[in-house]
Length: 486
Image 1 (cartoon, rainbow, N blue to C red):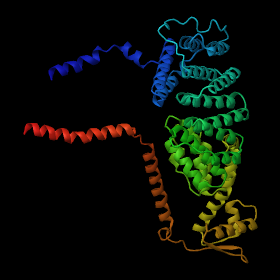
Image 2 (image 1 turned 90 degrees about the horizontal axis):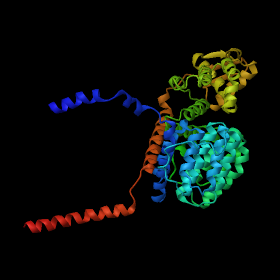
Image 3 (image 1 turned 180 degrees about the vertical axis):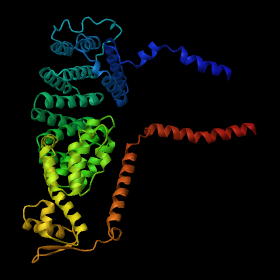
Image 4 (image 1 turned 45 degrees about the vertical axis):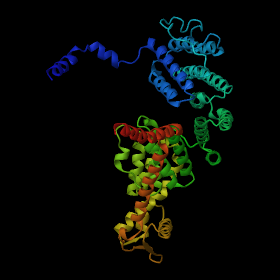
């Protein structure tokens, strides 16, 4: 015990401050080529393991960690060290890096030292990974023309191979191909290529490629508000069973947008909520976009979002326009709703939600009418028009009649006296609303359970049989041992 106490008191004092700082610092630029070379080694392990996705996923995660440290010299040095001299892509990729730095292709990355220990890899997967690294660097450097050309070269190179070990890397290249056209070109120009790539992926049973390309095509159609074509594509494709969480979240997001435009708000809310719950917490931009759509869809369903949902510290500024809308809908104030729509109209147009927000006007009037019905047992239609901000008594009469017909308001209109009489409010527990609320919660729990069961990973069948055989031999060995002892 005394020895342990001495070790515990000496160890923290013996640690050097420079050592602690070195372990927490970001990797230096000289280390980037070695880290990328280690990623190539993980890709080689994945190829030798017959397409084990975890090795490629590890390589992509390490690449994302050092992406901010990319420079033209480090990326070109990595390409020179990891790509064989006989590869035709080597000089092309180095030339792309030279376009960013503005120097000759023979000079970029040539001064890097200490890269003799990196062994070139001749696998096609390593070449596609090199294309991917260079493409990331070109996008981050805002080299639009070079990025478009590099993405086209990478896609053309992938078409020459039919290897399942390349599927994950190819799917990531397809994603950046669409992103490059969205930022620096036109998404419409990439649509035909994406459709051809999807047909090829379906024929080759490339599951990750299929789900990635479906999401890219849906984004392509929705970017131009082509909701009918997006729905036709979605209804005709067959999605694979083993889907990644990231692609599933994107698919649910696009499906929720389609359903919201098609007036199917319940299904839209379900899809968007599932995407929000499954999305990683680090994807703040994606979660913010989902929260905007969920807020509008819930208000179209007659629900009012909670205040704490729209006042999160990291999203408060971006959600301020939607918070103003929620306040107007909650109070049934048509004037405040129109003021918020006009003030933040540019934001709503950029978020592609202006079409849905214009539909909220009826909800605002309905909410205000419900509050009036609860507060007054008898009120003239002229006062109703004044409180709701309607232009005339005739408009107020038609609005009240429609609300009574739809069952939103329990009242009676005296047309001769232009008066609305409210009926007594009934107990909510005598209706079917509690049953419907419990049904929604139970359905959500069952869906969560089914998705968790589908996401479980099971050992291969041969391992199960081997373990069952070992378990069957164990009692036999025990009997033999008992006989020898006896």
